[in-house]
Image (cartoon, rainbow, N blue to C red; front, side, top):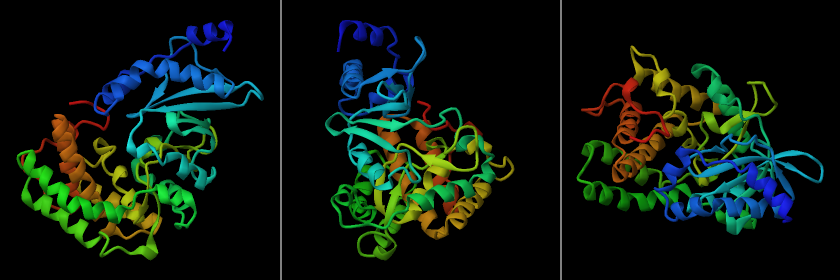
Length: 344
């Protein structure tokens, strides 16, 4: 990189949002990545012949594990985004899934540097998302995206990169109760037993292999952006955490977000109705969606307890109990639960 161009990049370097810096502390090697991320940014700008497209002083876009910087390709002035992810296991197979989807249902992958967890992607309209659609109107658009993403597994090399939900569930039958005991049994036994029953019935022995699909396991409102700028009818997925298995596994993130918008008179009933609507719109098994939501939220609760994030653990327990139709005692009202991304 020439000194002039390095100076141009340095003058307009974005800052990492505090949210990402905070979440980096929970990821092995995250603090080191935060210290060196600017060097990685400059390296990729040079390697892929890019210019930053962000006003000085404006922070980069970020989620829990990655920073996304708007860029322009110097060769054709096409807009794109550079995504730099804190290295972690869940992100390793993201480019494999994006390559298989090929821009159909998910953002198009333009370039990848796998050892650095760096991706160059098409730029979408980041000012809007499925979050901007009224809650009860979201099942249809979500289901359309879900169907586009649900590829039938193949035998080519990329498919071997994805963990299998049923195989993971077999391991959870051992690891979940052990962690529950280690943390001092932080929630009722009946909820742990409900999660274990799902893992046993839907694990490797009980799996429906003929129904396996590629699953975007983080398909929530904020990860679905308009397919065309400014419209809120068709959406394109970003930030996949791909696995292979039951499509119903994808429903849970649509249930643990936007809890404050549930009917105040009967939030648990509204949540169950929303789960049913999502499953019906996508042609999924409603009980399967409930079952996997229980497992995922029990896992989340144990993680949050281990991290000292009591409010987030309570949110997961509330969702798990609500879809099961059995309240977990001692939880605050749903309106007082933290939204995902808040540190408590």
